[in-house]
Amino acid sequence: MTSPTKPADQSASPAEDPRRSAALRTAIIMGLVALGIYGAFFLRAILNS
Amino acid sequence: MAEHATHDTHDEHHDDHQQSFFMRWFCSTNHKDIGTLYLLFSLVMFFIGGFMALVIRAELFVPGLQLVHPEFFNQMTTMHALVMIFGAVMPAFVGLANWMIPMMVGAPDMALPRMNNWSFWILPFAFTMLLLPLIQYAFFGVGAGGPAGGWTLYPPLSLQGGNNVAFTIFAIHMMGVSSIMGAINVIATILNMRAPGMDLLKMPVFCWTWLITAFLLIAVMPVLAGAVTMLLTDKFFLTSFFNAAGGGDPVMFQHIFWFFGHPEVYIMILPAFGIVSEIIPTFARKPLFGYQAMVYATASIAFLSFIVWAHHMFTVGMPLGGELFFMYATMLIAVPTGVKVFNWVSTMWKSSMTFETPMLFAVGFVILFTIGGFSGLMLAIVPADFQYHDTYFVVAHFHYVLVTGAIYSIMAATYYWLPKWTGVMYNEALGKWHFWLSTIFVNVLFFPQHFLGLAGMPRRIPDYNVAFADFNLISSIGAFGFGLAQLIFAWIVIQCAFLGRGAKATDHVWEGSKGLEWTLSSPPPHHSFSTPPVINDKDLAHGDVTH
Image (tube, rainbow over all chains, first blue to last red):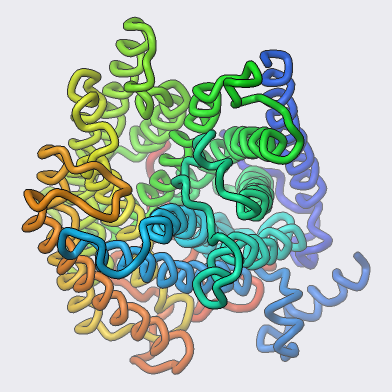
């Protein structure tokens, strides 16, 4: 339960915030999970039918 | 990217910067503007769905066929549900998440602002697609109308709808993409963009409930997408996933649908729990009782939501062991939900409460949602469910959960945060009128439906036995009263958001409010926390829980 790392430059603009690259990584992982679930259900149904 | 960075840096120093109407509302990457768009979209959809509900209740005012053809009635029941679930309740919660989560965790904006814009702007196209067959039919007499097989889209009935099936399925895919992108943004914002010192167990409960809801969305929206894609191929590409004549299994659709559908119920209520957990401590002027228990109860409810889906289909025929499992698992949900109700009541216990409109809606939520929860427990009992299934008892149950649960929480949240968003206080007297008229009429509307269901009146029918006439009459009067009361809500929102009428709101707005969002001005600056705020535990609603 730790807080995220403090940005090196607190006055940086939102777009330059280094936390954004970590956020992008999180987003890509979650997107792949969603696609994986969609594919898995579809595959399961195809194999089942 | 470089251009965007320059633009943002510019914004930091010019919060009142001028953008053209098109750039501000169509190309916005600002969480507040996108939150506003979501909330306005949701309000419009609430009135469209509400109008459909009034068509239904007008037809059911007295026995016999009065106003609309049975086919059109079926379209109304189907579209009312789809519009309210995917167009009103879910976008309202995403709008609230957009507005509040960055401010609550001390972030400058949502983690992925461009995706945020895309998440919203998919929705108007999705709902145009969904509503188009109905609009063509109702206003121009073209085509066969909208989907009429119920929002659950059970085959083979739903596949008999002609080309509107393709429109509906495409719209559902678009809504799913929108919801998943919104959920990803919430997760990335909460996990990666919190201000230093904002530990997870110091976050407002609203952020916690939304974080868990976002994981639910990512887990189940692809399942719905898979189910409707299979419906599409069954309809147009001659597959037989759910076609018994081709070796498929229609019951498989019900299993897949409800594996999505039950967590969906919690997607629509967990953020409501978060909202109420913010409002009650503010107006009770006490910290939330059992903050950590609230978080763990939310997670427990989310987990249990995945293992109860077949309670929606007890009558379809399943082994006794299956019925027992799903019955007991469903009843188990009452435990963490009971923890929540206990904690809300304990927060209010011996507190210095005042009853401004947000608190009235929050207390109304606790009482009326609990009634919906109890009827849910009744429905969980397998032998009883065989009688209740597909009756008006079920309609009464889920409307207590969704109207006096989800929608009451959205109303409460709007009154609670509207002064922060707009910078002006809403009209408290009108707010109280809205609450009391809504609460009286919503019970006149839905409570008699319990009796109708217990007496055996089936749902989704345009005509009924004269034995059900009295309670239907009362219910329809309640529906029109409730519908008219919502015009007060719309007027209050217009007054604050568009006309700017009302006393100037202070930054703190409420005497007992705590949390980062209240440290900002009312209305807040264009970028909330361009510089991460310094977190003082005493300023947080839940700052002392880890000590």
